[in-house]
Length: 122
Image (cartoon, rainbow, N blue to C red; front, side, top):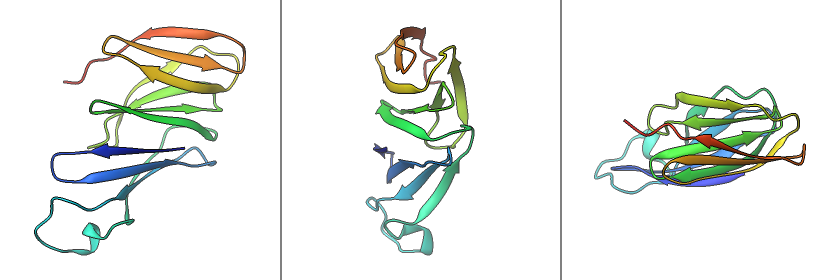
């Protein structure tokens, strides 16, 4: 799964992997200078926290959400790479996730859909 996030001066592509990690790659844009980290496609961030394959990534506002076969959804700050919240409670893989301003919605292979309160960005 992949999702693109646009920051103040960069664009980043996040890629969810089978080992449960999420890699942040540079997409260029906004820089007037060149350095090794400015090259498009360079891995500049690794988000660790899931224990199994990533099944879905979405970007909502300044947040990134990841769903996993480890039966959780995580809310990430794409600028710092820190996990801000873990949503757990499904008995099967989380196969889909979406969010609005106030809630996160998850669907699982356990044939349930859950609604969670969303942590608002600081």
